[in-house]
Image (cartoon, rainbow, N blue to C red):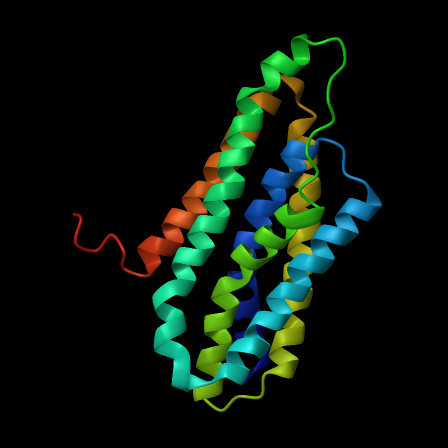
Amino acid sequence: MPLLTILGIAVALAMDAFAVAIATGVCLKQVSVRQTFRLSWHFGLFQAMMPVIGWGLGASIQGYIAAYAHWLAFVLLALVGSNMLREALALEKEQEGAADAPPRDATRGMTMVFLSVATSIDALAVGLSMSMLRVSIFYPALIIGLVAGAFTIIGLHLGKRVARLGWISLWAELAGGLVLWLIGLNILREHGVFAGWF
């Protein structure tokens, strides 16, 4: 498979991670080197692992995975997005308190795992496709992981810069939660869930 084709796939797969990283940067407001490394490492690692897992599973169970993977991605993104919306709506009350509580760190614990899985589900399908095409997976998986990691770093720091514009911070955090919901809904739309609705 040509490098340009692999890069095109990698960039397309990295878009969800990029959007989620922006939303995370907005919520954190201050992003450390450790947080940057953790999120970019995990997003890159999951984006690289999923195609390998998909490739290993092969075409025999593609129908079963395809039937549920988009729902899993939607639920995970909706959970994290709902939590971000709840925290954004509580922001005014927190600011009225004597001391501001630090924002919840989405680069730690289960939140990071949920986000890593949710943003890399599409890569599983790519791995299944490459298995059917009998394409070697390890080189494409490496490129996919590196691109996702790089886009995560850019998105995280872009979100941090947006959050510094104090007056826009609340709206940006609300938008971040809504973006996660929209990404999840778009995944469902791409898989034809809403086909009969309109």
